[in-house]
Image (tube, rainbow, N blue to C red):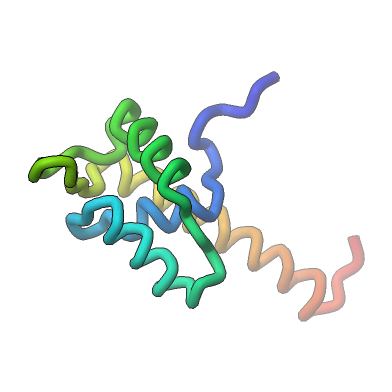
Length: 107
């Protein structure tokens, strides 16, 4: 059975959506992701624009303005919900880790 699209997010997806909590264009997103993660996560232009198109199709983001070739985007309510769901999923994973390694529970 194929994985449901956007049920879980890759790191690039997560950070792109996180950056779009305020209006950004593509180059700003790439810079913000790198800055936010201290260079740990990189988003190439091909990946970025492919994901932006998919996020637009799923109505997770919307286009806010177009200036020549420069397009700006922002998170929609649906995008906020997807981001919140991923945040919650990651917190659950961290708690499971803590159960095992910080409390010494055997699996």
